[in-house]
Each structure stands twice: as structure tokens, then as C-alpha cells.
Image: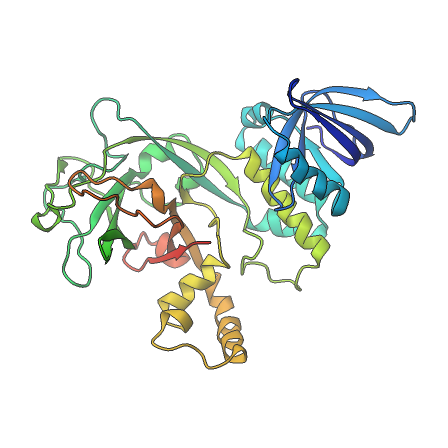
Length: 399
């Protein structure tokens, strides 16, 4: 598993040839042709580009890396160059995406731990080793053949007595999809965390704002019944909404580490250097991952602050979830600090973008039309262990 660290002194993009030529010094290790260079831009997004050619310059310590750089204008390079010249000229070089995805799970974990030790200090490396989690990415696809017990949209397939759950006002909730745990267990290790292998059903309560509709809370039900199942009819009070398009799905297992601002970090506050190192490791791992869509288990990919903490505060009706705000910043800080230890018991069950589910068969307007943020269905570890899905909390975050 070849990894290296380089210092970039300058670079030049050739749009016509789809290349980027970097002049670099090797700091640790030595990259090879076919490896990827992980370049940062000013927003600390990471982009990975493969090395086509390595040449040594007149100085024995300077090399020229020619990268495949298919960007059709100079905007990407301008942002990367600004990062290099003004903030950070150090870049990580690692194995190709193809090589990574040929690894089995244990090999990927070993590679992650090498990157963590290579780019982080001992505390960061140990934190990642102790807190990584496995997740399943779920990507909708066109339905092929008969719908099974794992699907998105359509109508739920369940035992004949199954009913659509209702919200606090007695209105039926929209069916989002169902996941047969045993289907996932055939090819992944993450879902073996579930103690049984029945079916998880996900429904969204309906919130109306003027003429627009969106999900409110996500309701989860669970059934061990997988025999003698039937398609459950749409309740009368959902006739004007209909149902989401029925789709199959593709799944892929990936490794998650806690987001940078996670309450799982128990050490002293990170320095800026530690913060930057951790974020770089996180973004490198994300580059090796799969497209963001729907995620089962793993760590939340948060947008604004710790989702675990937000779930704890919402569950207790505190701060912005309560009937009144705290009077001052000190009171807010005290409430947050008091609840951080307990919030570490929360787990991500399901995560998805609001714009994944937008078209209902009988609704004229797009559903979730203005919900461009992310939904997180959170569950306490004890409830997950006992397969109790009645106490989940839904968190919604947006930029």
C-alpha cells in the first residue's frame, strides 16, 4: 500500500491536454505512476487526480508530476493553486480508487489506519481506530422485475395486518421505503450489528407550508414477518398525495469516521493543525467512498454541528427544540456541556438528502421542493441493540 507526502512548489494546467504538471519535493515516501494526488481547494474540499508520469528535474530533490486533470476550465486549478500558495502546499499521495475498491474490508481498514498515522498525531490515529463505523450506501435504481422486501417507494409489502403509522394529528405518513436486513447481511458486515434480520419500514410525516409539502419526522417500524406478506393499500387520507416511485436499489459498504465536530471526541480541543489534519483524512476517505445518497448506519455526515448532540437536545425538548430559548450564551453553553456525555449514546440509523424523494404520484407540486438539506434518523445504542425503533429522533440540517 504505497503512500507518500509531497510539497508542491508550483504547477501549470494544460486544458487541451487535460493535464496538470506539478513541481514537487518528496517529503515522506515516494508516489508511483497510477497513484492519486489528493489536492485541497480553498474550501477544504479534496479532489483526487491520478499520476500519469513522474520525472526528475535537474535538482535531485525536485520532481515533476504530470496528473490527468480533466477540468474544462481554469477555475478548479485557480482555487487549488490559491490553497497551495497561500495556505498549504503539502499533499497526500495514495493508491488508486480501483486498487482501493479491490481491497476487502480488513485491507481498507488497514489502509485507513496507515493514513491516520501518516497524516495525524497519535491521538487522532487512536480516535479514528476506536471510533470508525461501517455503513451501507444506498443508491436508487430502476426497478427490475417484481419488488422484493427491500425497495424504495411504491407501497409497503408486509403482513396483512400492517398499517401506515400516523402523525400526532392522526394523518397517515408517507411510505419512503423498506429494507430487509437479511438482504444486506449477505454482502456486508455493517448490518450484522442488527440483532435480528427482519424488515425496517420508513415513513415520513407530512408538513405543509403554504402550498408546499415536505417530510417532518421520519417514523420507523420493524417486523420480523417475512412470509405471507402482501402489498398494503394506500390509506384514504393519502389519496391526494399517492406514493413515491417504486425503485430497486444498489448498496455498497463503506468505512465512516466521526465528522470533525463530533461530540465523540473527548480529548482537549484540537489545535488548528490537528483540525486540518483530521479534516484532510476525512475528505480523503470520502473521496474513496461512494456517491452521497442514502446511508444506513455509520456516522452522520453533518452539515451544521454535531447531529448526536442535536438528537439529545431534541429528545429532551431543550434550547431551540424547547418552548423557550436560553437567556444567555453562558446558559446555552452550560446546557450543551451538560448533555454532551449522554449524546454519545446516539447512533445514526438512516440518512438521506431531502431532494432524493420529490415526486408523488398524485401530487401536482414537487414534494420536499425546498428541502435541500439532510435528514438524519437517530437511535440510541440500547434501542438499536434491542431492535426497538419506537424512540427514534429525526434531525434535519441545512446550510
